Length: 278
Image (cartoon, rainbow, N blue to C red; front, side):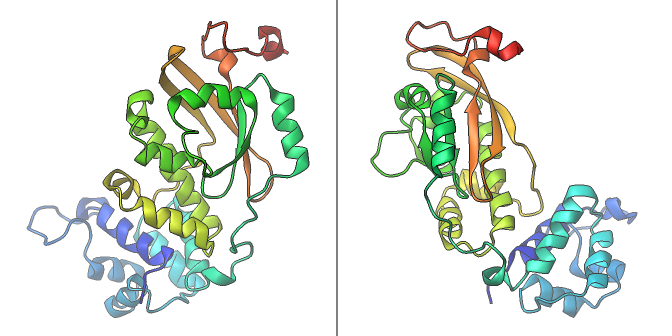
């Protein structure tokens, strides 16, 4: 039986912890890193066989008390504990989760209007799987030389980052960007666990070692902003801060604050400085 997100989290978190984290003496040889299944089971007050069934996806209905006990045993707090609980509640029921069906890949007219109103600030809209659904001309002018619009099919930020031959060359902070996009897909899978298009995108990306290495179910960041450091073929080295805004439950509006990037090329129109200070 295929493992669900909750099972993946259990295994990953158990492997992440060390005996010293739970007050046990270190040392001694272990066949695999992390805590043994029996050690976690004892701490949670469940049998090792039951924990094995949870980790293998054979049991998908843990009680609230078991979820809390496992969260304590795995030293989960804050966002990680919340994420763990959500995965537990959804385990085995991904296809019945609200909004888990594949989203309509079309942006609303109002969002389209906002995109064009933001010009000359580069802006675009992404769907659940980081596919770019629409953009304004300012963004197209900035990213076309990077190769992001090379093909006729819908561009995808994660696919570009992990598969396009130019990505590592033009992204000076490629590792940081790769972390941001893989974390965004982890959050999306948690929110829409039954979206087949999203799952197919993630499965395809897993064929790339750099993505697979970053796929850690137990880590879900909440970053909605950051900086892309570009070696732009036309504008040279530029740092572009970006902010993400929720457009609706399936889509996000991303704005590249090019006016703060220190670009002085006459070929790129920028938002007047006074607009930033208002």
